[in-house]
Length: 232
Length: 292
Ligand SMILES: Nc1ncnc2c1ncn2[C@@H]1O[C@H](COP(=O)(O)OP(=O)(O)OP(=O)(O)O)[C@@H](O)[C@H]1O
Ligand SMILES: [Mg+2]
Image (tube, rainbow over all chains, first blue to last red; front, side, top):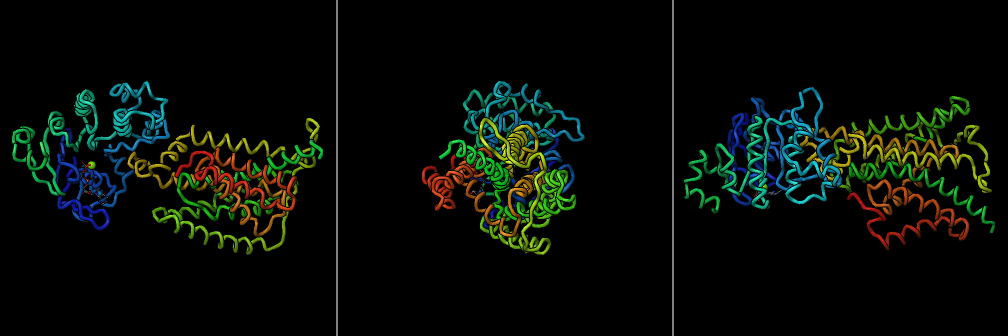
């Protein structure tokens, strides 16, 4: 579904990604593990077209994404849940969801009712301003909002970060439900154990390089990789 | 001093404030959503007034002419705004504010020359329609009918803008885009068209203001300068991007102008500016919440 080949991404003059390659097949949950500043967010921004790579190629569903603006990538089926949530604070929870809903042509699989099934807290707080939600609720709203665009592929940037252990468990469940619903997920995480519980495969990124690509079992067992790049 | 005369004068000031409000609401809308300080906003107001003159004249300055002018002038200004946005402004959103100010300032000069070219330097006027001509006595106060009309239109525009921002999809998207346009794009929304629509709506309000002011003043070159200074001050004291702030700021400005005329005639022009200075000393970021 997604193929990233040898991309080099910059912020202005600073070179951040050095030939990152990864692929995600339809229906998979793939994690991208790495510590602070490793380049996880930059990889996701590159895929979403927010910080397009200067070199290398990204293909989504067989089509290149080069030169395609983010709103068109979103319409092709990519959704992005940023690590800092970026909820529209002045809009209510309901409005945050409404503006993301796309009515055009396709059979809208995700609507408010369905995202509320997945995140029941949001239903109760529909009329609340996005800015008045707790951090955890904002994370859910960010995911719910992304689902409202009816994506096929979803980029989750550190969804577990800062969540209470109980909420982390709930979120793992929710990610598995997304997988069951047929979504493909690329999950950037530092919370290795959580990420490994929900993923099918994983990549380890450090300093803008992919250091390791492996199955979950290998990632679980390879202590060397874990201590070298993940600090766990 | 005759108290009923004072109240009449205040009402007239309040009516003038409604025109200030309509124009500043457009300016503050563009400022809030697009983050563009549109210095040429006053020029679009002036164009609105001249277009209203042309339309009214085409109808022999009849009552019907006024009503047509009132509807068509904002649409003509909207069309001009669309050309400006698609042709020029849309390529400049990434630039810093100083660039945008310089660009819209240049635009103001160009539009000014264009108006001079099309309408010349003479003073023009529009005749108010019969039912809005003259004055009525309400609760013992003498008030021009046209002022009453403005006092009706102003709140109508305020409610309309509230409805647009809070009840329509475009308005909700515009509110979201004003804080985080990148994230709005990520949701699959073409922000570029949202910006075009917001700019056109904001400028149409300038055109509406111009059409509304036409029967109350002599339409001439230079009216762009007065209004742009006044409306920028209003937008600043109200809180950037805040429609209700623009309403309060306009009322403060319009009413203090009347009060100045009444009590300090020799400082009448300076009086509203003194009020602005005091407000900014007390609340440097404006009376209501700024979107910036
Ligand atoms: N806007 C920016 N301009 C310049 N450098 C940036 C910018 N954003 C991130 N960087 C740098 O790029 C590198 C990779 O950052 P990135 O945000 O992709 O890491 P990350 O893996 O997502 O880290 P975290 O776990 O902290 O979110 C870091 O060294 C960071 O300092
Ligand atoms: Mg990050």
